[in-house]
Amino acid sequence: MQFEITKAEVWAGETEDRPGTLSDKLQNLMRAGANLDFVIARPSRRTPGCAVVFVAPLIGPAQEQAAQEVGLHKTGIHCLRLVGPDRPGLGAGITRKLADAGLNLTGLSASVAGEQCVFYFRFSTADDVVAAAQVLTSQLS
Image (cartoon, rainbow, N blue to C red; front, side):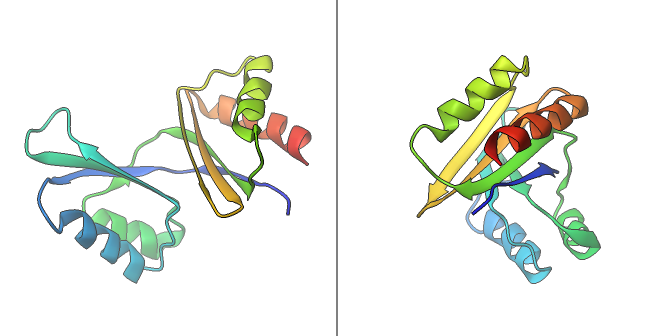
C-alpha cells in the first residue's frame, strides 16, 4: 500500500468537563458522516471545569456544519496527515527526513492500529506543510 499524504484541517473547541459532553460532540459529527482518525481531549488550561477537544478530518459542508453546531471551529493549525503501512523506525526516519530538509515540527501525533499508521505533523506555516508533503512524497513513494 502506498502512503496517503494530505493537508489536514484540525478543528477544536472547549466543552464542559463532565460525563457525556465529549460523546455528544462526537456523536453529532458521526451523524454527519465524519470518520475521525484524530481525536484529542484534554483539560483546558484557560477555563477551569472545561476540556479542549481537537478532531480531524472533517470533510464537506455537512461535517463542518455539525462541528460548528457543537462549538468546534477551524484552528488554523498547519498540519500534514500521513496514513500508510507501519514498519519499525518509520517515525524516526520521517522526522529525520523533515529535519534534513530544514523543516521544524511544532507538534506530532501518531498512532498504529494493526498494520496501519496515522501521523499528524504540525508546522509553523502553510508553506512548511507544502514543503513537507513534497519531501515525504518523494521519499516514501
